[in-house]
Image (tube, rainbow, N blue to C red; front, side):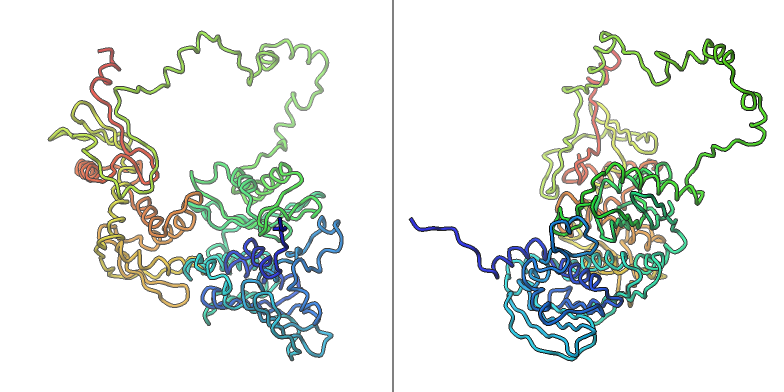
Length: 613
């Protein structure tokens, strides 16, 4: 028997490792920008072509590298950040594992130019498939320029998994924003296909937030600044009016490293308790500074997930800091425990509480009602016999009530009902309850229809037909509206324009990050076009992170949810009748696209039984 285990060649091992570190162009952008920051640069340029597929180049004025270091930096796990195991627990730089450049060199053609201030000439290196093709001196200014071309040229299968240019560019912008947000004192610029997307002069954090997220935040930010011996927290939270219906502009940084943490996000959300409408999410940019020894940043390949030594303490501190900031700016109520002069003059406050007074007080009924078994929070256990019949009270009938199947399905458009789910009594009168439910007399009983969910199903099938089969009509606007969006949304909207046109929107690019809304679907009420598109973009960006849908499916569902009539909206009898007829003609009338029931039918036998008949 011959031996079968062998050590992989370096170029293959590097490509496998690159799969974890460099999964798409944005991954390389993150690593290269962080290297430039670690090099002490004050001026960083990012140049991208074809959403990073053809070119990603980062130029900085950092300290540069010697000729030996320039060659060694492409070796696996070659790093200047760690010398001994103890250094892992005191990391203050962005990168430290020495794997980024090795991974990049394994999947792209790389050109590096670098020079230190003390050197007369710099170093020029060309690498392809982890192999150095050329190394020679070069005349240049201090700093480093690294360009990676033709990403995944050596692994075409991985290149085929990349998304459209607009989609990949959105990810690049996301990574650029996260690094640029963390270092407002550094100049950053981003150029894509020769067009400048960002030009960020150095300044304060508040200025950087406005530059990246939009000038609308300039006067709507509340400063957060709390310092303790254990940790510090600084940054800004948006006032309640900046909240969005989806998770929008939310950024957490720990020691200037962007992180994702649902746990800390919940801390901020609870700090806004009662200040935000239901299902709204606050805006925040918060920086946590802690001793690196109490944080493990090496638990995930991208370092975006970290582990705290004491998560509960961090949670409590973040929550308290945000609450305090909101209270200071009179946004959240705060309790004043200081006593006014009038109260201080009362006998109960001014005179001493003697032993005799204590004895009289402790014997009173008021005192007794708050002690021992009479405490307000104490509830005596009820006899089991009293609770025996409770489960049956909450158990729905199983035989006489015709309930809908709420199991979610992603292929509704391919299903066809065998028969109508219920038959409406002719010439009947509809009843609207709480401006949300439509009560419909049907043959052998009655149906209760949720107007918003029912309309969502109707619109879903309508928009699905428009995108996949026949486009909807467009009504041109008499006064076209101009829509200005940030760089992320500009890329997303550009990507969605063909599908939006099929649904009935006529939107055209109009210069840098601007669009003109020339027309809207014929059955959509005019006058709110700009807000509708902004909301649609927000919903699309953060639509279902758990389930993978196609771009078209996401758009259809977002449009249906946005345009559906809402609960607590009064409908005329004609509108109710039209909604019921449209629902009954749907291919799958009984559930929404997400699986929620649109109606429930109660038959006559069940109704009789309710009244003991």
